Structure formats: C-alpha cells, structure tokens
Amino acid sequence: MKCPFCCSEETKVVDKRDNKEDSSVRRRRECLRCHKRFTTYERIEKANLSIQKKDGSLERFDTEKIFKGIKKAVDGEKISDKEIEDFVDSVERYVFNKEDIVKSEEIGLMVLDWLKTKDSLAYIRFASVYKDFKSLDEIVDEIKNIQKI
Image (tube, rainbow, N blue to C red):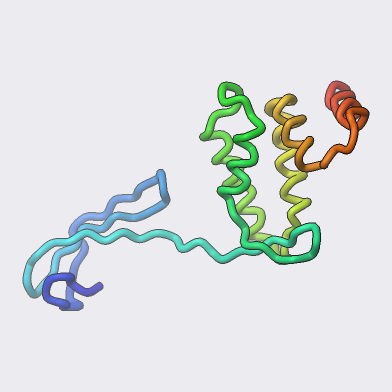
C-alpha cells in the first residue's frame, strides 16, 4: 500500500475493523517514512455474472432488479427490506456458485417459491407479471393453487 502523502510503500497497519453491514474491512495505516496516518477500505469485488433471458440472450445479473421486482409486489408491512435483501443475497450466492449460466426463469421461480411462503398476495402480484397471465381464469386458477397449499 502506497502512502498518499509521500508515496512510500513502507506502511504498517495500526488498527483493523470489520464492517459487517457491507462486508468491508477498514484499516488504519501509518507510513513508516513520513509517519502520517491514513485509512484504507477493502471490499470484495463483485463478479460480472450473466444470466440467460427467455429469448436466449445474455444479460448482466442485477440484484437490484430482483429487489425492485419483489418490492413492487409486496406490501411493505408484511416483508421487511432486510428479509428481501437476505433473500436476494441468497439468489446471488446461488448464481455465483452455479457452474452453468443461470436462466432468468430459474430466478423467477425462486422468487415465486419464496414469495409463496411469505405473502400470497405478493405472490399473485409477482406471478401476474412473471407468468404473463392472458385471462382472469388463469389468475383464478393460480389463486386456487395457492389456497390448496
């Protein structure tokens, strides 16, 4: 690590703290040449992951897109942002650890399965967009399927 003041590469770590919120590490350093102190942060670089869309094209995997899609479907009082973030993190881990390219349908089904256990109304809202219902009968059938569970 180079000192930002004198550009010396001889520094030592004086203090180290883990930040659990964003999985970063904060290090307080001191230059051994000019004795000035500075702070560095270490974060995990997110991999450039892709998913395969229904039409076969590849798209960059975007956790924010999943979060926003779920957020639109849920009533804010039933499922907290923290619960949604934890779920989205689990989807990201799944995509990251999968050897093959994950299809968008697979992610959509994961979201539907999760919503089914959390909030049936949010499930129907999400399913109405994801499954692209063509008639009221299809929506009624989906509601009947949920009520059986």
